[in-house]
Image (tube, rainbow, N blue to C red; front, side, top):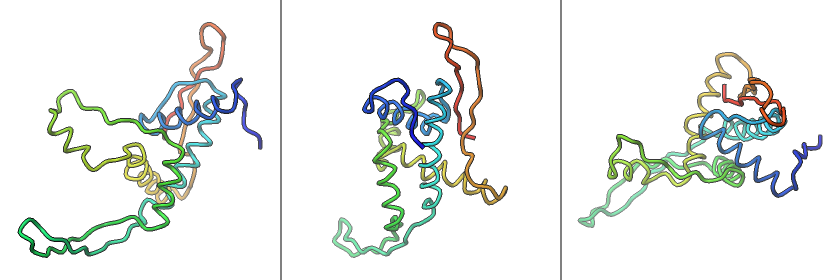
Length: 169
């Protein structure tokens, strides 16, 4: 099936869709036109399915390192399996980076501590929050897919385009 053209050249169309998929995953809902929402939905559900298959696929290792006093310390480390790493790279190839935002009540040191180990926050959110939620939902209801919902708002003032809210279920 061919993609919708959305009245834009290929590079602009792909950038628009990547941006909207990234915002959908980061914020959980976006407001857009019906035709854009249908395209974004198919792309977002594909990425969620990739994350869903690999969200629990990790390897536990024991790693020996030296501490400040040059003593050997054994640490338990949880790494991604090769399949999960490939899935994360596939998702990172498509999604844009959104820098983390400091909360209003959060001071600077707490913010730096919170984001110190998070290099790709959108991908982390997809693999650590969204995919396990849908995996649990699929186990309970026995269904896969259907991760998004389109709610119609009505025509846009100006050009009459059908506006919708696209949200994660």
